[in-house]
Image (tube, rainbow, N blue to C red; front, side, top):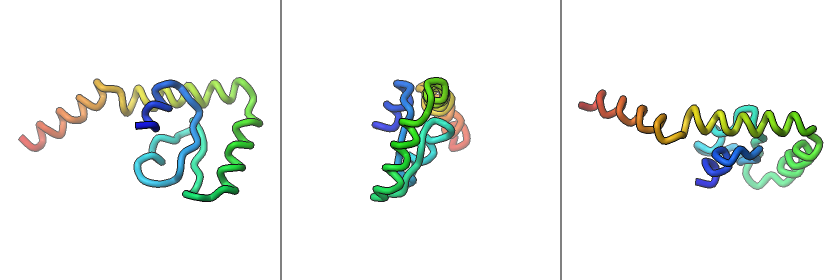
Length: 87
């Protein structure tokens, strides 16, 4: 849920490169390997080094990802497609 909340609230993200969470990162943040402190440190440094415009673009990308993949009407539509196939 935290991943969806981060996208919904237009945040730049740093997520681990595992499971479905990695699919939530597309030009809106950084992926790091699990328990890789060096990668996490590097990702944080990269975030700090971004200028305001780059940060805003990444935040807007988070909002776009949420609205195009996870918003309730999108999920409902996908669910209905699956239901029709099963039916």
